[in-house]
Image (cartoon, rainbow, N blue to C red; front, side, top):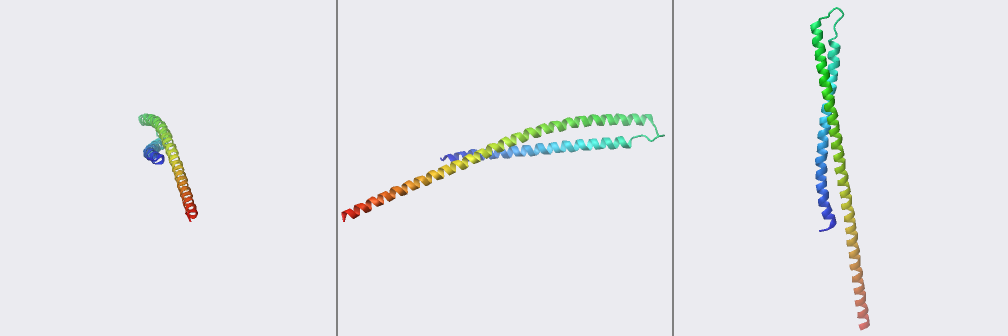
Length: 151
């Protein structure tokens, strides 16, 4: 089997691995975007709820104020947790991106190598054909020389 065909098989496997890595990267990107969107929504809700729940000047109800503050504290805790989720998903995204880029580079290198092998094989084939043609011409010339000297 020619080197180009062997390396092409390896390149096909590398392409499948690259495709899988690209899908994992896409999933990680989607997870990151979802986590980041959720964080944004939580932060906006916190700001909105905090603004709406500010008591009017003469409308101070201690129990309601304590409940509101407790809720805002819990919401702040959830936001902190969500920030951690966003950070983790960002790390996973970067890891998936690096893995995909490595697979892509490997695929590109193997494709280039297969292309070079095909060029070498084509050049070798052309060289052999030229040698065969040259040999045939030498034989033909020798035959014609013998034919002429025989006459």
